[in-house]
Length: 288
Length: 110
Image (tube, helix red, strand yellow):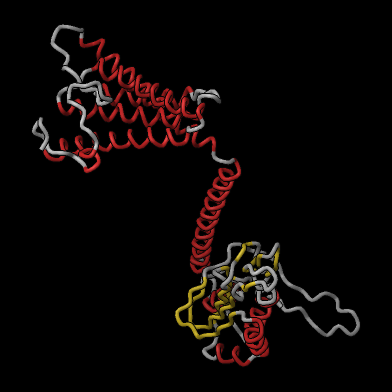
């Protein structure tokens, strides 16, 4: 209990010698303004001016702090925000495109196209990746090998031999198509008849959209698709790579897969080029 | 209240005018901000205690900012700028906490 009868507020304030209430501390305490000694408006103007200066001071200090951050960091933040915004836009457009396609098929029905024709149309659209497909199927997961310690420098370096490349994903996808998959998506990117899976700058691009490890290849097909794929030469090879290079490879049956339609659309008809003598292979229109 | 309006006006001025702070003043901006905060919180507490004096507030604000900047500048010249700056910030911080605690008691008890 202090001599003026009030309790100490904090431990720290109690430890410091307490200034007498009427001294010129920074607390702006002092004898109250006696009535009539000074017009109230001047005092108010002074206070208002000081508060305006304080607000200005805080703003300028904050602005200076923002400006002193390195340019590169600011630019990076802006770029990240930009990318996120554009991706959100693209996703919104993709959803809209899917809805519009559903509308188109509704109109097709109303236009009186025969039921069997409609069914054929839907089936072709599903295989071309233009319609949402749902069903049971298989999920193949490919994961990069974990980083290892470099024996020379002792630092963690990425495991180059165990990195999944576009070739691995292509093999898996082609094998699934060959086994009769009806719809395939890689990390959510639906594959169409002209989808490209390629590497650029160490990143795998599916239809020009980057995907990262772990790579989830979802395929909708027959009930036996997972077993058939498990026994396929691709799976056997990948399992041996998993053993030798420690990359991740897992196959499992998955029910209730829903694959969204692909955003882009290429209209055309695949034809066999005029075959040269001895050319027995015909390119498959389904991503072969 | 005219307090909020004045502060908002100051913030707007700062944003619009966007003054270029001269390079030799820039190192003392942070300490000036802390000193200004101490004066503002002290004024708020005095107002709630009923002993607010406008002249006192104006004088204490200006003197706080100047004295704090002066102490740090002196420290820079003597080679103890960092330590003196820390000391000033600690003391001002303690006073800010004391004033904020008193304000809090006023707001949530009275």
